[in-house]
Structures are given as structure tokens and as C-alpha cells.
Length: 189
Image (cartoon, rainbow, N blue to C red):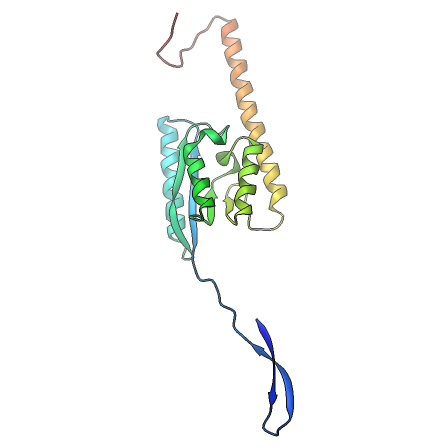
């Protein structure tokens, strides 16, 4: 910050000058959390979940200007954000100013629905909470992130829809051939 000043020098002459006033710097660390999600509770997925959680906890704790808030996560589908309790808890904590920055592996882990993904990211940005998606190299603190984010969200949703259509096709073909593959052990009728 600069300020104007005036005064008299040693010769008694008036002068005008600029006085530099050092700005106060916010030295508080960022409160950082991670969001991790896997699609099921299978053993392989559980190992992936634990690996992600450990990775992000270590990454945050080992970054000097960050304070570790926690790892929020789910072990279920990411199609609809309103059905994910930990995701909703994380958003509420961020809006309550308990979190400044959220790190997530990829947009597809955040949400498989473009509208949900963009809506929550805009809400967080409006409250000065930012998100980093490592896989897509998207950081919502940087200018120009919106185009890249929109594209990544659309790809994640298309991938989810493709998987769903492929599974429906598989089940139809099995039914046409009279093949029944049990998913769970409980049936009625």
C-alpha cells in the first residue's frame, strides 16, 4: 500500500513524496480436505478407497501452507450428489468456512452428473472455496478453469451413461438367451 506524504527537508523546502506502508499479509494456512469415492464396497474398491484416502491425507499434511481437515468419502455410485451423505457433509463444512480447498482425484469421482458437479462447484466458488481435480489438472482458483471443467464434467456423465447402457444391453441379451445371473441371494416369487 502506498500513501502520499509531504513535509520540510533540511533546507526548509517543502516536498511531496510517497510513503510506502507495508501491507498486512494473511498468514493463515488453507484448511484443506480431500474427497474420495469408489463405486462399490468390493475388496478391490475398498483397497482403492484406502489408498486414495492415505495418499491425500499425506499430501495435505506434507504441504506446509495447508492444514489437514479430513478425508470425506463414499463407497457407492456417484450418479446423484444428494444421495451421498459424506459429500453433502463436506459441502456443508465448506459453506461453514471449515474448508478452503478440496482436492479430488477426478471429476468423475466428484460427480457423474454434469449439473450436480457444476452446481456444487459454483456454489463453493461463490463462498471462496475452491476445488482441485488432479487427473484433469483443473484448479478452480485459476482463470479459464470453467471451460476445462465443463468439458470434464460432460465426459464423466457420458462415461456413466455409457456404462449404464452397456449393462442394460448385457442384461437384455442374457434374458433373451435364458441366462439368469443372480446378483444377490434374496428373491421373491
